[in-house]
Length: 260
Ligand SMILES: C[S@@+](CC[C@H](N)C(=O)[O-])C[C@H]1O[C@@H](n2cnc3c(N)ncnc32)[C@H](O)[C@@H]1O
Image 1 (tube, rainbow, N blue to C red):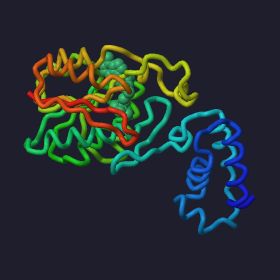
Image 2: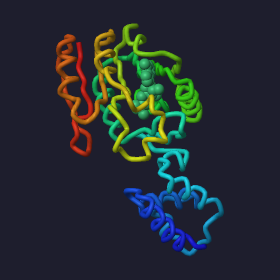
Image 3: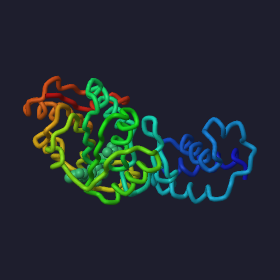
Image 4: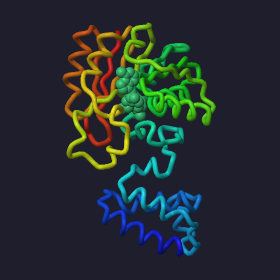
C-alpha cells in the first residue's frame, strides 16, 4: 500500500473511532512510520508504506493517546519519550515553563523544584532553557520517575530526580513549580485520558497544600478550567505578591503565579 492509500484508510478508521482530528493524527502516524515529517509525507505519497503501521493505527483507534502510540512528543524545545508510565506533556504546560522562566530571569543559578515531575517535561525544559539552574524534580510515582530519568539521560540534561512529594517544597527554593493532579473526575472526558495514570490526573487540594507548605521566592501552578480565581486567592492569602493569572492558547485561565 502506498502512503497516499494508507492516509485515506487511517483517516477513515480514526474518524470512525471518534478521534477528534483524524486527518492530523493519520498524517503524524504515517510520517512517524515513514521517518519523515507531515510535510515530507506529501512529497513522497507514492512510496510503499512500511509494515507495522497498522499496529500503531489499531492502538490509536482504541483511543490510546497519539503520544503513547508514537512513543515521543514535543514539549518546548525538547522531544520527550512518552509512554503510559506518565502523563502526556500538554501544550498548555509550556506556559507554566514560560512563566517560571520569567520569574527566575534575574536570579543567578536559581534553585528550582518541580513537584510531580511526571515525564520530566517541566523540569527538563527549565534546565534546557536555564542551564545554570539547579533543578530538582520529585514524584510519588516510581514509574514516572523512571521515565523522567530516561528522558534526562536521552537529552543529556543534568536534573536531580527523586522520590518525593509536596513536603519537599518546604526545603527553601527560588522557585517551586507544579502541574499537580487537578481533574475532579474522568467521567464524560475524552477516552484518551483513561490510558494515562489516573493518579496523575485526578486529585483535589494540591494547589492549597503546595501553597501552604512551600518556602519559596516564587510559585507557579497549573490549574484546571475554572480553578484560577480560587487558587489566586489562596496565594494572596498566603502572602504572595503580584499574583497573576495567565491564559492558555484556548483562552482558559491556566497558570497562577506569585512571588514573596
Ligand atoms: C498532572 S501530572 C504532571 C506531570 C508533569 N509535570 C507534566 O506537567 O506533564 C501530576 C504528577 O504528580 C504526581 N503526583 C501525584 N501526587 C503527588 C504527590 N503527593 N507528590 C508528588 N507528586 C505527586 C503524579 O504521579 C504525576 O506524575
